[in-house]
Image (cartoon, rainbow, N blue to C red):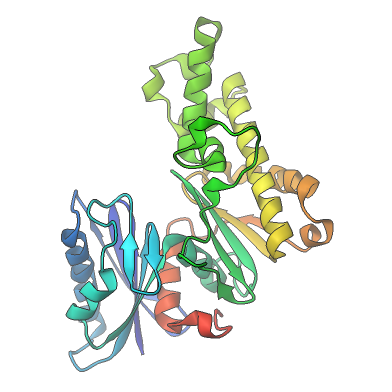
Length: 324
C-alpha cells in the first residue's frame, strides 16, 4: 500500500510518500503565499498530485492519505477549523479530497495529534505507548497518546493545553487564550516582556530597551536571558516554572513514559529541559514522575509530517493499539 503524508502549516504545505515502516521516500513543499479557503485545499491537491506522479500511482491504484492540520480536525465529519487560514472555520477538507481522490482512504488529524504520532514513530519517543508532546510556539497545545491511543475527547479539543489554570487569581488578560499560553507561549513570553519594559520605563536600561516595544521578539528575549538581562530572566524563569507545572499535571493525570517538548520555542528553550524536569518533580505524583523521561523533539521540522505518514499507514489507529 502507498501512503502519503501531508503537513499543512501556517505558511506552507509539505508532503511525502512513506514506506510501511514510515520512512520518507519522496518529499515536496509548496508555500501558501496568501491563499485562503478552497485555494489552500487546491494547493494540497497540487502537492498530492506531484507525489502521486513520482510514486507511480495510477487511477486504479488505491492509496492512503494522512493530513496534519493546524487547528482542530473534527474526527466525525472530516471538517477542519484552522484559525490561521481564512475561510477554514469548518472547512470540509476530507470531502474535498475524496472528490479528487475517490480511491483513497483519507485521514485528517490535528497537528498536536500528528506531532506525538511522529515522535513515537520516528522520533525521541519511538516505541512509546504512553507519551505526551507539548508544542510551544505561537500558542501551546499537546498531543496525548495513552495506552497506544491518541485522545480526542467529545469535541476533538483534547490538548488545548494553553487553557491550563496554573496561577490564581484569574486575570482578564487570559480571556483570549488561557493562563498557560498567555504566560509561556512564544506570544506570551513576548507580551509579558513588553509589558515589563513598559512598566519600568527609564529605570530599565537592559538589552530589550534598545529598540521599540514592537521590535521585541521571542528570539531577542532568549538572547537577553543569556546575558543576564533582568526582564528576560524574570519572563523566562516564569515560563520554565509554568512548563514544569504543566508537565507535572500531565504526569499525575496520565502517567506517561515520556514528555516531549517541541514547537518554535524549543528551539532556544531546549537547554532548559533539566530545569523544567526539576520544577515538575516538585509538583507531580512522585512514582509517576520517576518513571517519566523529558526530552526535546528530535524532529523539529518533520514531526507533523511523520505523524501524517503514520495516520496514513495505520488508518483508524484508535481501533487498536497500533502505533508502532
